[in-house]
Amino acid sequence: MTDDVLLVHGGNPLEGEIRVRGAKNLVPKAMVAALLGQGPSRLRNVPDIRDVKVVRGLLQLHGVTVRTGDEDGELILDPSHVESANVADIDAHAGSSRIPILFCGPLLHRLGHAFIPGLGGCDIGGRPVDFHFEVLRQFGATIEKHPQGTYLVAQQRLRGTRIELPYPSVGATEQVLLTAVLAEGVTELRNAAIEPEIVDLICVLQKMGAIITLGTDRTILITGVDELDGYTHRALPDRLESASWACAALATKGDIYVRGARQLEMMTFLNTFRKVGGAFEVDDEGIRFWHPGGELTAIALETDVHPGFQTDWQQPLVVALTQATGLSIVHETVYESRLGFTGALNQMGAHIQLYRECLGATPCRFGARNFLHSAVVSGPSKLIGSELVIPDLRGGFSYLIAALAAEGTSTVHGIDLINRGYENFMDKLRDLGAHVELPSERASEELVGA
Image (cartoon, rainbow, N blue to C red; front, side):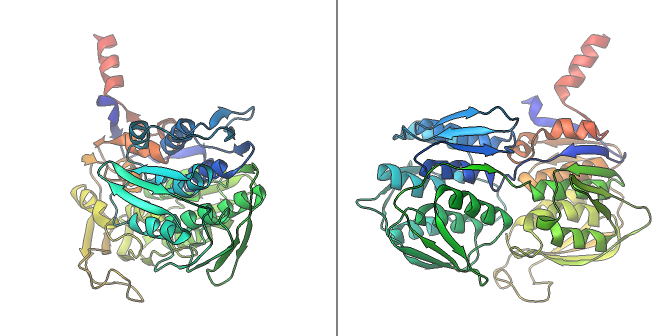
């Protein structure tokens, strides 16, 4: 469809103010957590993104009443009448989202069974769901795989267990938290993810009545309780979207005030942004990001789990690094295929070479597995408008940044994918002075002109 294509006329700096709301990596999970409560929950600062709509639809299929509150961006979720949902309806609503896997624990507690369809998501590397099922099996669930999806059954109350993650996976940590809070006994989770969104989810669960201890060594102890209530919570702002707009300011030589951005969750990014040559200013309402003039500086960078440099920050920053003087080295250690998006940047005039070797301080789990997970970016490069097909959420927004920084017009296909995690991004681009248009809009203008 034509409205899934965007024409981007680049070469102008982005300037102005936009606002970010609740984090994509927290809000849908907090919505799922409402399933665990006996009473209604109130979630604030909710962004209007597709992942929220997917979870809202899935909750409603299971009998949860979801309505908007009096405050803008507020949802009220009432799970008083949770019920089984039709398999075909679940499959249709889930689409390409991976979030349905997190429904398992809450549904096993509420109904004694759950169905999870085949899962999709961004193609940026392996995110195996089998580990989620193995975790649930350790809690006492019985799991049967069928062509249309996976059925899970809890014959009796789930039991606490001891789990050590081979890698501090965000999704696996969320799965354990959402399952352990109502399981009998104590669950010990070692090598857990401790991203700010995980901590915010723990805050949500604690408000509901959960007993969760977060240790200093990536160990989380969860003491199961018999019952949870609803919560009232304001979601933390989306640090990943905030960083994307910061990189857009840097790449286009612009100046963007991101209302809602917070320093605490972005400290690692802010340090790197400053090393590259970007400028920022923090106040009580947000952060201003701008290109101060002069040359940008090439850097060496490794992605890592929190508190390291987040993998979701890497792709938009790589676009800015194409404008830095010298050789930048990027070592991706979280998703083995995340650098695949750079091929299109080279097509636009960038000079990026990918390597299978670990070009970082320490070897990572991808080093001996034949993955192109390191990059050398040579700059500055003059980017030229091109035909682009969006590969994934963060890569897609990075293509928009590259198109805005480039000379000439780019045709960007698959922009609907960006709606998964960026609220009203088209309006925000236009508010910042970007010259973007849908082909349908151009056709209407030509028809009027004729």
